Length: 337
Image 1 (cartoon, rainbow, N blue to C red):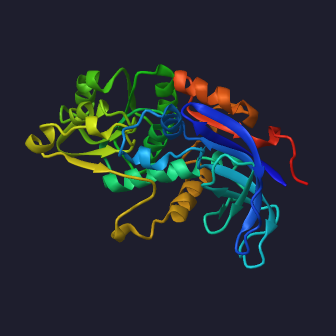
Image 2: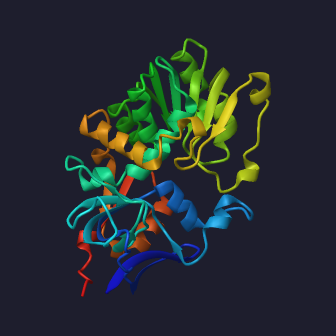
Image 3: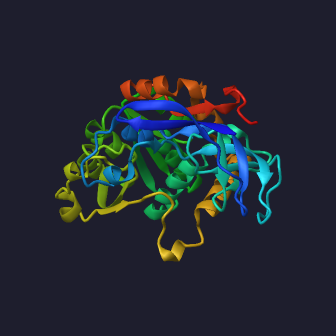
């Protein structure tokens, strides 16, 4: 049996390649992918290949590289030692863009009331949720979110669920701001973070934001985000810059005693250890089921897997019109023997 897999085989070179399908793990499942969500920020950085030697990115991206980590699949076979799964179950895993996946330990069952498209956001929702937890938001906080791509949209919704008084969305793309307002942003500013100081002051009683989330991953935004953070406030780095040496500290950190925190995946300190990746995903699914969060309408494009080379080239050239981009594996011809 073969699996059609999306691979990054070199800098800005994507290929849909037929490879042997994985075997059934004794303690896991074999599943056929339904949809997989592109993490447009992360995967475009991988695809672009413009990361500094010695950076996290340089150590991670090795060719051929498996793109993606947001996979929704249907269980076909269950290993003899696996528990809690049955053929026909829908699962979310952090597997890459592969037609067939073997999952043992990292799979979570998707509740019936959650669609495939909604479930595909589970990993990104965990990354965003971890960032909001690390920010230690308080009820009534005034929050600014810079960059309203996939992570920024999720952070916006979590901030409202947490009871923020103001959620100020900042992005140069008007369409993204319109979506953010429909999903919880109280105000929006179309422009760069460097132009948003007066906007943030005007909606925070001139104090600036209690917490600023930089969800862009661009080194140039860091000093601009500090200017939007109040004295003794918190600045959260959610995006991971591929050029970290250019992301330098500014005087604001010392003179205004701003706390700077970075987060990565679902890693939390020991006192929050109960919030594993799976427990955070289950909470996200609960919010979806209760209609406290919405992500199905964040999908802006669907593509067959065969279109992957053109999809990544297009995203690198211009991501302005996209937020959620899915590969629809039902449009892939059957390869099972």
